[in-house]
Image 1: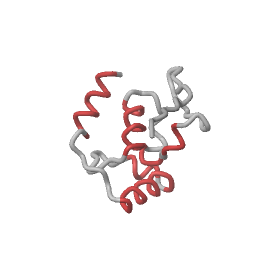
Image 2: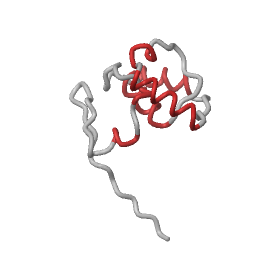
Image 3: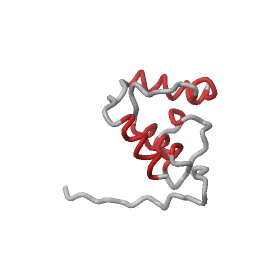
Length: 100
């Protein structure tokens, strides 16, 4: 699992964050055309939730479908239960309070 994660980090570590329209396109493609979108071999840009989801996919903790671009931030909250594999699960969020 860790080797797969390191290989993915090496692949994407210098990629830029996509523009808003690029994020919207990626999410729409991932949700509407997931099987076509998954065949794309390399990332040209990557957004935060896509990075997390693809990391989990590469480690075998999420199924390959839907593709990583179909996930949104609420998918990683305690309100939604991700279909994690290998007995993995996410614990509840931790509230961080910052001084004013």
